Each structure stands twice: as C-alpha cells, then as structure tokens.
Amino acid sequence: MNTQQFESNVAVFPNPAVVSFNIVNGNTEAVQEVTVFDMTGRIVLNQTYTGQPVSVELLPIGNYIVQVQLETLSIKTKLIVLR
Image 1 (cartoon, rainbow, N blue to C red):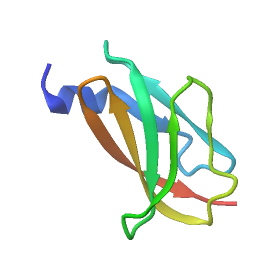
Image 2: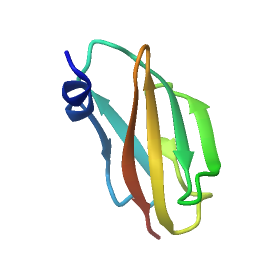
Image 3: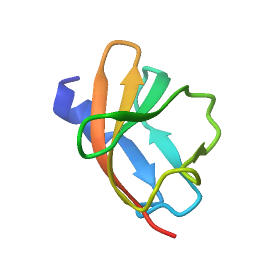
Image 4: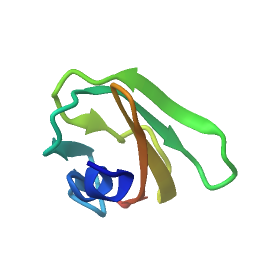
C-alpha cells in the first residue's frame, strides 16, 4: 500500500470541529499519537491516541494541521475549529 492509499484511509471528523474530533482509520496500522499544530507550526496539542474523541475545547477558533501518527507512517490533514 502506498502513502496515498494510507492517506485516503484516515479521516478526521467532524470538520469543522466545535468540541472534539474523531479519527477514522481504515488502515491495518493502528493510530499511535495525535498532534495538532497551529498555522505557525507550533504544537498546541499532543496526545497518545486512545480511540476516544480528541478535545479541541481549549483551542482558539482557527485553522490547524492534525498529524496522525500510525505505526510506520505520519499523515497530516487540515482541521477547522469553530464555536
């Protein structure tokens, strides 16, 4: 499976997010960690993924990049946080 196939099998929803977001992973590799970056590249949230929704309640309204770390691959996607 190539990188593009991995990327198409990982989704962050709802997007835009208000309280939290979920990760759907259709890959055989498990999600290990979730990191959220602001648009300046600063890490604003980093946690081990437990399968539970990831809270964004403490993040200001704005655009973010979510990095989903699988066992051997890292996938990034955009996320919008609203209130």
